[in-house]
Length: 193
Image 1 (cartoon, rainbow, N blue to C red):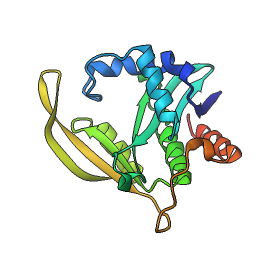
Image 2: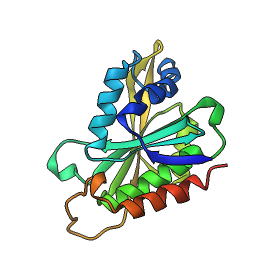
Image 3: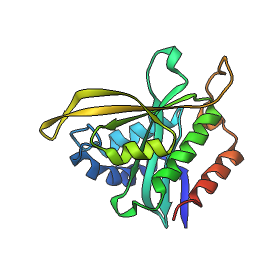
Image 4: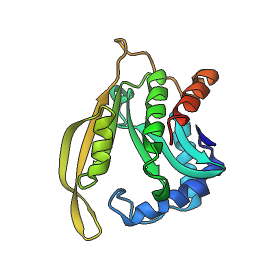
């Protein structure tokens, strides 16, 4: 049975194992594989304010997605940057889409109004993925990251969410209605093939 749930710090080793192969690619601009301790810290930090979701089947992590604050100044507090990673052997099942859709629903409940994806220019699959979810290209940073012996472009994508003005203060993930959160995660998990 496929389940989407909130990631816990104890999931760090499994999430790091899924992320590790990405380090050799240009999908992430990290050069070194983080330690389990560092990955644990990242999950804990994210969970302080934003959702950090994972998808698992029979205890095996198939993918994960999370959001974090896009920029630090107070006026940007309604903006979030999203990331998703799916295990190579689990692609094509709709896991990334289900995780992102659940994440976007939860962020809307928190009061987030602007969503951002920051994607390596050559990662056309991720660009198309974001477009299918309603994101549009906001701009391109040319030759901004150097990895694997070459300069790479980064595409900024954005999606605007509906809401009232002025916006209410953001709600932390833990402030969301538990039943509503579970309903969203359960419903989105059923979309996975």
